[in-house]
Image (cartoon, rainbow, N blue to C red; front, side):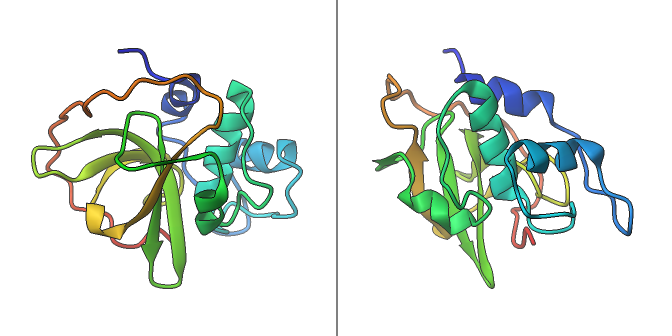
Length: 161
Protein backbone atom coordinates (compact mmCIF):
# COMPACT_ATOMS: atom_id res chain seq x y z
CA UNK A 1 0.00 0.00 0.00
CA UNK A 2 1.43 3.36 -1.01
CA UNK A 3 1.04 6.35 1.25
CA UNK A 4 -0.46 9.63 0.06
CA UNK A 5 2.01 12.28 -1.06
CA UNK A 6 1.36 14.48 2.02
CA UNK A 7 2.45 11.61 4.29
CA UNK A 8 5.69 11.21 2.33
CA UNK A 9 6.27 14.94 2.86
CA UNK A 10 5.38 14.73 6.56
CA UNK A 11 7.75 11.81 7.17
CA UNK A 12 10.67 13.90 5.85
CA UNK A 13 9.96 16.44 8.59
CA UNK A 14 10.12 14.00 11.53
CA UNK A 15 12.44 15.42 14.16
CA UNK A 16 11.87 19.12 13.41
CA UNK A 17 11.47 20.89 16.77
CA UNK A 18 10.41 24.30 17.95
CA UNK A 19 13.06 26.36 19.71
CA UNK A 20 12.06 27.78 23.12
CA UNK A 21 12.76 31.43 23.76
CA UNK A 22 13.45 34.36 21.46
CA UNK A 23 14.92 32.27 18.63
CA UNK A 24 12.56 30.25 16.39
CA UNK A 25 13.04 27.27 14.08
CA UNK A 26 13.59 28.64 10.59
CA UNK A 27 11.86 25.65 8.98
CA UNK A 28 8.64 26.15 10.96
CA UNK A 29 8.85 29.89 10.33
CA UNK A 30 9.26 29.13 6.61
CA UNK A 31 6.05 27.09 6.64
CA UNK A 32 4.23 29.98 8.29
CA UNK A 33 5.57 32.45 5.73
CA UNK A 34 4.64 30.26 2.76
CA UNK A 35 1.14 29.82 4.21
CA UNK A 36 0.93 33.63 4.57
CA UNK A 37 0.33 33.35 8.32
CA UNK A 38 0.17 36.20 10.78
CA UNK A 39 1.82 33.94 13.39
CA UNK A 40 5.38 35.07 14.19
CA UNK A 41 6.66 32.40 16.60
CA UNK A 42 7.14 28.65 16.63
CA UNK A 43 5.79 28.56 20.18
CA UNK A 44 2.21 29.23 19.08
CA UNK A 45 0.31 25.97 18.50
CA UNK A 46 1.46 24.75 15.08
CA UNK A 47 -0.16 21.34 14.55
CA UNK A 48 -2.57 22.78 11.97
CA UNK A 49 0.27 24.68 10.33
CA UNK A 50 2.17 21.42 9.89
CA UNK A 51 -0.85 19.70 8.29
CA UNK A 52 -1.48 22.68 5.99
CA UNK A 53 2.20 22.77 4.99
CA UNK A 54 2.10 19.08 4.02
CA UNK A 55 -1.16 19.50 2.07
CA UNK A 56 0.13 22.62 0.33
CA UNK A 57 3.36 20.88 -0.71
CA UNK A 58 1.34 17.90 -2.02
CA UNK A 59 -0.95 20.22 -4.01
CA UNK A 60 -4.12 19.84 -1.93
CA UNK A 61 -6.43 22.38 -0.34
CA UNK A 62 -6.53 23.01 3.40
CA UNK A 63 -8.90 25.03 5.60
CA UNK A 64 -8.66 28.83 5.47
CA UNK A 65 -8.18 28.85 9.25
CA UNK A 66 -5.82 25.84 9.18
CA UNK A 67 -4.09 27.07 12.38
CA UNK A 68 -7.25 26.20 14.36
CA UNK A 69 -7.17 22.43 14.83
CA UNK A 70 -10.93 22.07 15.18
CA UNK A 71 -11.40 23.93 11.86
CA UNK A 72 -10.14 20.77 10.13
CA UNK A 73 -13.52 19.19 11.02
CA UNK A 74 -15.05 21.34 8.24
CA UNK A 75 -12.45 20.35 5.62
CA UNK A 76 -12.57 17.53 3.09
CA UNK A 77 -14.68 14.40 3.35
CA UNK A 78 -15.86 12.82 6.60
CA UNK A 79 -14.69 9.25 7.26
CA UNK A 80 -16.43 6.84 9.62
CA UNK A 81 -13.14 5.14 10.50
CA UNK A 82 -9.48 6.08 10.20
CA UNK A 83 -7.33 5.20 7.22
CA UNK A 84 -3.68 5.86 6.44
CA UNK A 85 -3.23 9.49 5.53
CA UNK A 86 -6.47 10.80 6.94
CA UNK A 87 -6.48 13.82 9.19
CA UNK A 88 -7.50 12.99 12.75
CA UNK A 89 -8.97 15.86 14.72
CA UNK A 90 -8.78 15.60 18.52
CA UNK A 91 -10.32 17.45 21.42
CA UNK A 92 -8.34 18.50 24.47
CA UNK A 93 -8.80 20.92 27.34
CA UNK A 94 -8.39 24.38 25.88
CA UNK A 95 -8.73 23.45 22.21
CA UNK A 96 -7.88 20.70 19.81
CA UNK A 97 -5.12 18.95 17.93
CA UNK A 98 -4.73 17.65 14.39
CA UNK A 99 -2.39 15.21 12.68
CA UNK A 100 -2.17 12.41 10.11
CA UNK A 101 -3.06 8.78 10.89
CA UNK A 102 -0.27 6.38 9.91
CA UNK A 103 -1.34 3.21 11.74
CA UNK A 104 -2.46 1.75 15.03
CA UNK A 105 -0.77 -0.17 17.81
CA UNK A 106 -1.75 -3.51 19.30
CA UNK A 107 -3.66 -1.67 22.06
CA UNK A 108 -5.93 -0.05 19.46
CA UNK A 109 -4.51 3.45 19.83
CA UNK A 110 -4.09 5.32 16.55
CA UNK A 111 -0.59 6.42 15.63
CA UNK A 112 -0.47 10.02 14.48
CA UNK A 113 2.26 11.77 12.54
CA UNK A 114 1.91 15.40 13.49
CA UNK A 115 3.55 18.66 14.38
CA UNK A 116 3.66 20.20 17.84
CA UNK A 117 3.52 16.78 19.48
CA UNK A 118 5.97 17.26 22.34
CA UNK A 119 7.03 20.46 20.51
CA UNK A 120 8.23 18.49 17.49
CA UNK A 121 7.18 16.53 14.41
CA UNK A 122 6.87 12.89 15.46
CA UNK A 123 4.60 9.86 15.54
CA UNK A 124 2.62 9.59 18.78
CA UNK A 125 -0.12 7.21 19.97
CA UNK A 126 -3.54 8.71 20.74
CA UNK A 127 -6.56 7.20 22.45
CA UNK A 128 -9.49 6.96 20.04
CA UNK A 129 -11.77 8.40 22.74
CA UNK A 130 -10.25 11.84 22.00
CA UNK A 131 -11.10 11.75 18.29
CA UNK A 132 -13.63 14.37 17.15
CA UNK A 133 -13.46 13.25 13.53
CA UNK A 134 -11.50 11.77 10.66
CA UNK A 135 -11.21 13.73 7.40
CA UNK A 136 -9.74 13.08 3.95
CA UNK A 137 -9.16 15.47 1.01
CA UNK A 138 -12.15 15.90 -1.29
CA UNK A 139 -11.81 14.39 -4.77
CA UNK A 140 -8.89 12.16 -3.78
CA UNK A 141 -9.28 8.59 -5.00
CA UNK A 142 -8.87 6.21 -2.09
CA UNK A 143 -9.53 2.67 -1.07
CA UNK A 144 -10.08 1.75 2.55
CA UNK A 145 -7.42 -0.62 3.89
CA UNK A 146 -7.03 -1.84 7.44
CA UNK A 147 -4.59 0.30 9.40
CA UNK A 148 -1.16 -1.30 9.69
CA UNK A 149 -0.32 -2.41 13.23
CA UNK A 150 2.89 -0.79 14.42
CA UNK A 151 4.22 -1.58 17.88
CA UNK A 152 4.48 1.35 20.25
CA UNK A 153 5.30 1.39 23.93
CA UNK A 154 5.08 5.21 24.12
CA UNK A 155 2.62 6.90 26.43
CA UNK A 156 -0.58 8.19 24.86
CA UNK A 157 -0.54 11.90 24.10
CA UNK A 158 -2.63 13.91 26.54
CA UNK A 159 -1.75 17.57 25.88
CA UNK A 160 -0.27 18.97 22.68
CA UNK A 161 -0.26 22.68 23.50
